[in-house]
Length: 612
Image (tube, rainbow, N blue to C red):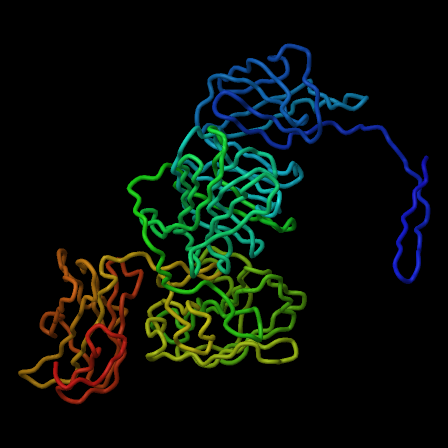
């Protein structure tokens, strides 16, 4: 019956709201189960929607777990909405069902849990924890077997003076050296994080050290809090360290009070992200952490290969490309990937697409913005592209979504690249030019994107989108729409290049192709393909074909089984499984007996040569 008002005061004076009367009604809501999870194989935690009281009747009358699991005792957790069951007989990675009755909330009415209440759960090696006590936050930790975990979270943050992230942890005693691979991370905010962390406790403001992966703009880094309640600090190698899903590897090592975080592209060669010296208890919670920051979207991190480190080597970071950042001062949006000729047939494939990425810190309203030039598309009213997020516009949205198993593809766009690339622009709602480029199909543009199935990816945005040096080809044929393209996997013949071609000859001289190994080590060409027709694997290197660093390999038309066109054509070197073009050269008409080659050997410059 009490009356309340709100008052607002500023320089112009004071205003007040109407009066409202407080009405209090009895609590008639029964407690509901929010989640059930194990802590090791001896405890099961049941988390309710509100504080509860444990029944005084025998344990077996109120809590039962199928599969022959014995419930021995119960107790309230540190949070009054949790009941902890001491159990025996559980197995790892096994699904169980718990049945609950007789549990009541702590209201005056003592509302009981609904009759027949049951909940299924799977035993995990890691225990889920919500930092900061935000029990309303959606959290799911799903074990995928063999060190795999999918963690979903709505909101949460790691940083500042206190954390509200989601953890999946186990208690480690003493030193440890752990690693995990972040297969994918659905970024909901440019500063969302997924990583490997150690904390002095589960308190929100506790000291911690973690190796994290963020958005493509931010990359991988180490973050730590040196003292309780202090601001968390971030460190990273000079030049940054990129995320590289599905091969983003993170590692965390404790040696006494020295904590070190690492990043890797292969899980073997590790680069130091940073280190911190923090005194922590001997036994500490260690595990996986995810924060999405945006409470209106679900961030999903897929962790794989969680476990102890073995066979590790420390290396210096040598970035092979820049992170996804701004390519123009006129907008935060960039063209991040372009598939203009998915296959050998010019313009006939439905799998062409243009991908955009928001490299800024806030969302961008793209209402009535347009892709213009060779292909055309207008974004619908109200379309927003969140910071750190991608959008794909396709020639055939349904076909592209089915091929790459993605959602949210826009389109169709009108027009066609017709296998010749061409002009591409991004215009705002007032038709002001934000991005502008003229895509080429010959050197210095990446030739492998023209008809092999590779897409163009923005690898060095600081050059600007119109500069060919800003672009590289995708890691594999087909591209990677809707996500950052990973760095190419390490190939046995990754440093072998086409070095010279001789295509116009008269007997006794014959057409020839020369390869050169730029080193280091020995390159294995077994199974690789050399061809001038992507529809036919004209020549496949036999097993055991190797090339030493600095060595040449010359193959003439008799060994290859095909001749080259004196009028000019394209020669391709493919890896053994055909997923990637290792090197390619496109040349024009040649004079009789005059080769075309790299000068000097193995360089990026091609010239008319005096002799073969």
